Image (tube, rainbow, N blue to C red):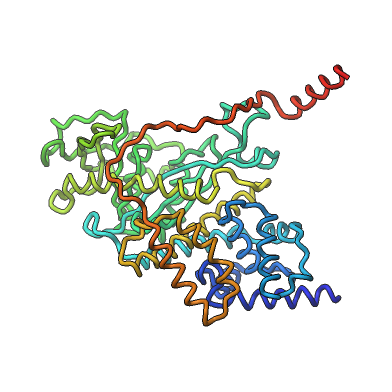
Length: 475
């Protein structure tokens, strides 16, 4: 009974701190926002130390920490309790209760918080000057691996190129991001291989779920040549979304045909295929237009060091007066930002190799990384606004390092000191600028050699048994 009273006292004290202006990441994930999301989804939680808010705060600190372990996350909570004299002596630094609390935390809850954080940042940030000031969004895919457990292998099988017992389960992600502020607006998850598991299939799953939020009428979507298909372009146009893709390498471009708009710039007409694909029903097929008029532009890359010398762009932006050839080239070059944004999530935040051992927890871990990423981007946007610069001029790695350094002080600061610390945080983040190195080129190779460790060429259990037999024979 005394133990439960102590837990209740500690829980109330932590909740009071998290509900203050310094809760979450610089106050961006408030207790009211979390409670509202819980009520909207009708979730029920046990009356224990790790409430949803405390669990979310600890989970956020975990995904932002370079260590990333549950032990480190619980140690951070213990340090906060001990330093602030809020029951550190009664708190048991075991990872079991925290891990169980993470399992109780709803996947839909974390996903909704991540999407809300991205949408709020996107709508708060004014569109850039590119393409007439229209909202520009980018789509791209990536992968992440996870522990080799039977449950993970069942839902996210390893690639067929890897031998049984030697590979790792892999999840595929397709994300829609805001080009101007780099916020993640929508994500689809699926297995790496199998039927309807490719990037286009996952992207199609976002059409209905994200049409009202991540993709809105008037948007312009950038993508690489993997997304060029009649059905993708037609579906986007039906939603009022224009697109700018790189032409697929298998489609031959003849600028002597079509309506000429300028040098290496013309209009072409694509006809609807005679039969629908396997994933499309007959009714949707009949609603698709019989022809699509698209604009095709060839861009000559003159910068030294670029691997691509020429590329052909395909777009639904047909007006030459509004969207010049040079502006289309500049816009498509900005598509590379999505590669850097996904690299920030995977490398800087260590999401490339996930830690959880069940599919449900893997998905929850991914959404928590995306929530933390959107919150960090929000802090970066605030810092950039104060400094009078663009959000993409601020270093993401520098922002994460600064937040990790100052978050413990923010959590323990009094209300009068919290705002002063937030000002220090924003000024420090704004000073970490991305280097201005236009058109630089570097060799695609690394100088530091990897350690000469032999690769495992058979399942670990067999290798261990073979070593045991060898040791027994020698003995």
